[in-house]
Amino acid sequence: MREQTTWDLPFNERMMLHYEQKNSIAKEAVLLLENGDSVFIDGNTTCYTLSHYIPPEMELMIVTNSPAIILNMLQMKSRSKLFLIGGEVSSEGMTTGYKLHQELKQYRFDKAFFSCMGISTQGCFFSKIDPLQVAQTLAEQSKKLILVADSSKMNRSGFLFGLESKRVDVLVTDSGTPTKTVDKLKECIRNVIVSGDEIQTLD
Image (cartoon, rainbow, N blue to C red; front, side, top):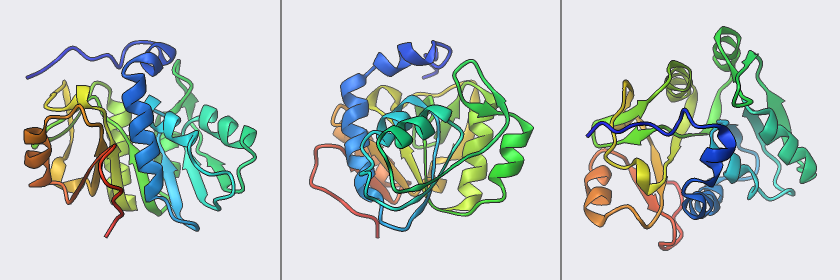
């Protein structure tokens, strides 16, 4: 069913939506990182939350379109190498546009974290073209494409269809996602991790 999107809300307001679920997902998703990984972290609210849980002593190559994530990592005195890709800065504080996508194509990632406005067995849906294009580029540039999406986004569709679900390597969601939905998603996504379950690692 197509739902009204919350993605048009200001970033700070979206941060407070499903706050506990985002933190639970972030804590689980960060366990997928390994020392030495080259990583893209998108500037959406769940990925921003994830950046708070990356151990400062971990040595990664982190690329992002979010100045806020860079600032957060610097404040944590992270030992990771940090790269901010350019472009026009949106009202949400993320770089967007042609320059962003051209720079993004120059990188190759071990793991890329992103989110969307809705996910179903059909695939990932977006309300804006820019995050859709970022997700499509990441699918081509990354060994592991990792979707972080809370239970409110399950079985939601939207105005823009971005990726078939089978192109997502890992989905990390929260325990509010119904078991029946998890089972259906497991048929098309190789790894579905529910935060709070037994710790899982990538194959």
